[in-house]
Length: 180
Image 1 (cartoon, helix red, strand yellow):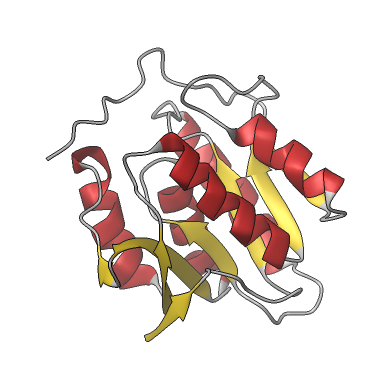
Image 2: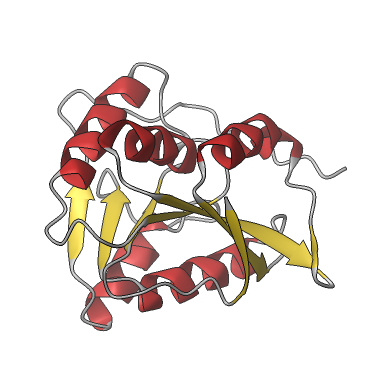
């Protein structure tokens, strides 16, 4: 596994995956299968799947990348150049993602600050060649910014592929983001 420090940026061949963190349990295998299929048929067979660490879509994406043979870059937050502790609800997912990662990218952002997380995602999207968005089509709200990231990618000419398989659903209750 390689580690890189910087803005999280990738190459035009990289596939950035964003999406809902509150996937219903029955939705996880549906989304994982759909992502695995898309990542396995990536056109240039180069590049990596890139995700910002966390539960929900990032973890499902990491599993799909590993199963499809697509290399995985996991972006983790840093504070003052040191890896930051993820929020409690993301810790187990972060641990699993790090074991799946071919590369870890250290990026300065605060995992407890929504605007900071969105900024990190925007930097990934702007640097990638394709956005896979695990998105049910709902508008952005105070917690989920998937709609914003889809709009952001399209405005910058980054191709977008929406992943929302038939039967997919979100949980009724969003996991609490408890600080340490």
